[in-house]
Image (cartoon, rainbow, N blue to C red; front, side):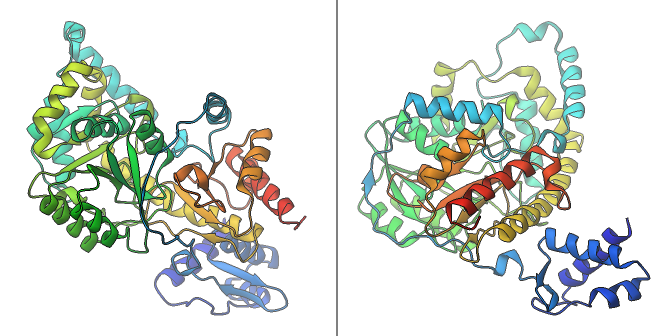
Length: 475
């Protein structure tokens, strides 16, 4: 449609620097004359730019180029002295409520891509072919380390990013959390202290609680994490291992700088302390370049790199992997005694999907969709919340982290639950009394900016923002 063409031309001009943040855009009348369109079409073009976060309307003044999300006020991260704490397992009631909201609604709470962004039919065709090829071999137990064809496909796939490893060094697991769990088992014991990001994905905190580990929260910074404090604890040998997300961290979306990643690998080797790298969002960047993991700089084998296809392709396939480094033998021994491996047909299907080039094509499409959705969701949130609200500027992943001083997130959670809106509030991401004015939103479900009310994710986002406005006395 014509108004969309006009809007996307302005987006191109902004991206290429021909229009600067804060610069005034043509008046509606002039825009209509320049493009030979009606006033209604011109207005719709500006409304679309607003919805996508590229323009802002100022009463009695007109439309102006918006400040990019990356240059706007982002949530602050508290500075604190790291001390060992004990994570708590959710109560039965909390677990039940979480299951209810996750299964009943899903879009805003669980960090996942919407089904329409996933190549379901293509994967099903690949899976059917894999089952047919297996024949009677389907009755055999799979290799506990993982099918060599899949491990080879993954090694070839990641070499395309400049991250090289050998297939015999990789272990296939039942998802990323399973990979992390085994890594924790081979590097620590119940009661040990594990260094983690702060804020930290609540699923990892629950896993650590279930395994009887204590945690040491390391503050986040604009570059990544406070490596000075981590270095002090490593030097004092007060931690047994570290568990960090390093690229497009959940929930704040930060990626450690190359310098930080190099330093982290060097510290692990110098102090001989294992570092488990949860890299499940590595391939969901919003740009063209995929960062290298910390494991790339690991020369001594103290990094255990974990990933999966749960966020990129199919959570239900339960396929992940780990490069355990010097812990390979112990890792394999643990996998052999605890598990008879991952599903062979699914492993073979994924190997074919990767080798055929379909996986890389899918990832390119998803990255473009996420980059667009980040702008749409952030734009809607900005329009409905006061200027004091801060929104994260993630480099990738599927979540936004929002901070609003004075917000009672406990009350907000209860109100959202009553309306069957799944929500992750800030307190879930820490063992300390932090992030009480923050919440996390999944942006993995597409929303049409012109009509957000036409889809479930849009309706729930608008309803959630209305609850916040009511709490703040804005309605």
